[in-house]
Length: 185
Image (cartoon, rainbow, N blue to C red):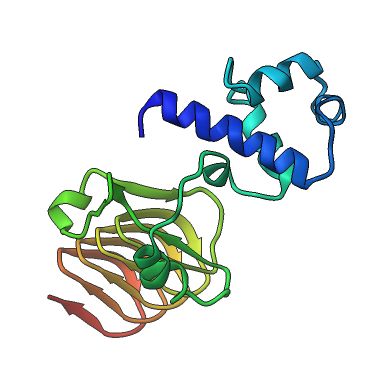
């Protein structure tokens, strides 16, 4: 899809969603604190909304930003990732390069999920850097965390202060304490 096609799809979708929502151009403009002429230009494909407007439009219409652009999430991705995850407050991270999922530890070494707060559980297709995790950490890359209340499983190395459960790694394991089993693969 080129820029012209993207603009056409966006303008068509704004028009469609506005009408489905029962809004006039004036109503939509009022809700966004802009002129109705701006809405008209969007719908006619003369201009596109400023990037800051996209989250507001998506929220107002009750859709995702990708839906505004007519992007469909690949069904295989939904099946393999989104649908297999429980709604359990686990933080999940998968890295894509284009449409290709990066799987090898070597390719993942350039990508790190950094969690600045505490987390319940973490499952990542990359390196993980975090403070404290109440439960388990699973990463295809390395894991660098403060304290982990459960198990740590990493494709790369593990560097943690304390792991309450088991620690398994494809690389080195450097921890002050591990209260479970250690398995260096």
